[in-house]
Amino acid sequence: MKKSHHNGVILLTIETNVGLNSIKNYGKILMRERFSMCP
Image 1 (cartoon, rainbow, N blue to C red):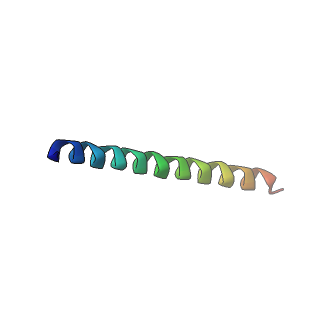
Image 2 (image 1 turned 120 degrees about the vertical axis):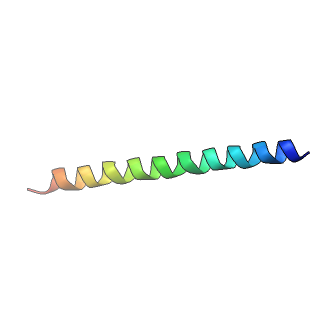
């Protein structure tokens, strides 16, 4: 019981990290497009 809860926490942490990384990458892409649009 305790072990499965621990695994769930690990999975949640991994999913959160993946989500944060994708948000960072999306921000980089937006900044790049914004700079390329500037004359």
